[in-house]
Length: 135
Picture 1: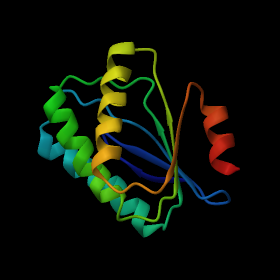
Picture 2: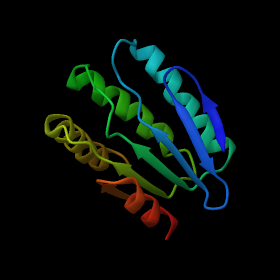
Picture 3: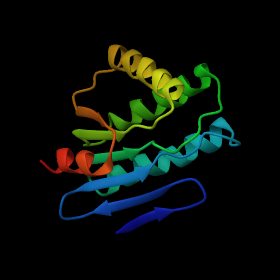
């Protein structure tokens, strides 16, 4: 079921399995405040539907911001994510090794700084990610 769609974000919700999925948006050509606004829409949807399982498809997104800006956005989003009831999150990774290196470094920093208690796994394909989330 399509819950939300605009120029940056599309949120799909599978009611039977309580999985909210989204393709992570390109962080290109938008201001930090615009990106924060759109990501807050994701958080609001997670809260409103009391979602427990969250799937991020980041295979095709582009990141054209500095590492500092990217970390600030990720920190803000992660802090808000902790206020939801999400307890299981899967991320489908892309082929861009530089982007994935940056994401992994940020993820490690965020895990060290924030009290994450949710299960988290990364996958190379959607089917395996969904299977893990639904298990």
